[in-house]
Image 1 (cartoon, one colour):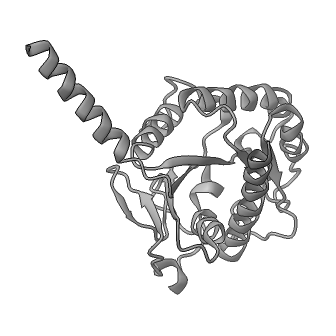
Image 2 (cartoon, rainbow, N blue to C red; image 1 turned 90 degrees about the vertical axis):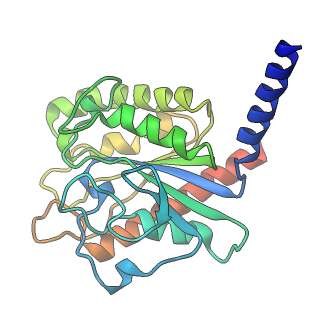
Length: 253
């Protein structure tokens, strides 16, 4: 009798857990380094709250999404996240967007591996943990990646593709989403010798359900490293266009 009661309680708890997942709540993992985290100047638009866009804060609570979305460093500012989310929403009142900020400024792709420490965290492990928390309430719809400045070297060009292929395979396995869309972004052309961009553009050739968005025409802050506010927002829109195309392709399969 006790076993039956315990089993019924287990079933009830399992049902409640499943019931909490809202299929209209679309989750997106944001990973990479500082240009995903955002270093654009905060402006009046930065604090406008969209009722359908949420972000997972550093305490793993869902809060209204405003810039800075990331909290990797005190200099975090405007990135592509919110413009991406609003572009994904369009005029659709039936969905919500949940952003999971996990980018780390200055991180090379080599620290995006299990058990690899960087500054005060573990980029890969933290991203997996936080995304799984988010997936308890919503459905993972895509992974956005902007990283490469730290590997924009002759050596980085040689090892980057194998590293990114492994990273995407790990993410998809961890989240049990073998077809999840993955979109990477080029680094800014204002960077001296952006040799990593041709490698980033080959990603769709080596990774299924993947795309690379262009950074052509985007401009920098005074540091000539980070996208300025307007360009970060334009980049977010380009991510959204690419994600929508990948999602549409998946729907037709």
